[in-house]
Image 1 (tube, rainbow, N blue to C red):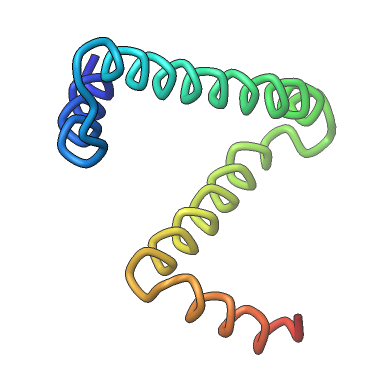
Image 2 (cartoon, rainbow, N blue to C red; image 1 turned 180 degrees about the horizontal axis):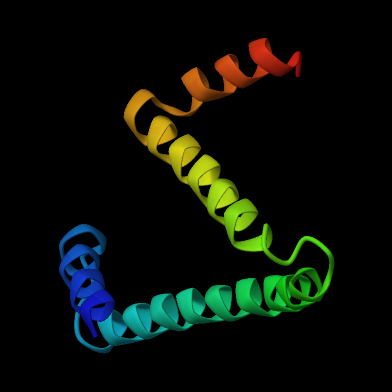
Length: 96
């Protein structure tokens, strides 16, 4: 419900949509977000289930937490410094 409200505020002000066009745009946006979340879960839940049964079962939560922290840190840096700055840093560090 909160994402719908935020979407309404953003979409109504920036897109200059009127009437049913706003509703269609918001429903389409929210359905797209939900489909993306379901795809993410569908991809990673089986992998986590396999990892949970293996020898490294106790490390799985730590590895997942570190992965999320790395991706989140990259995303934050991308938003703060701009996409080009992060890519230049990665390409210099990893010789991309």
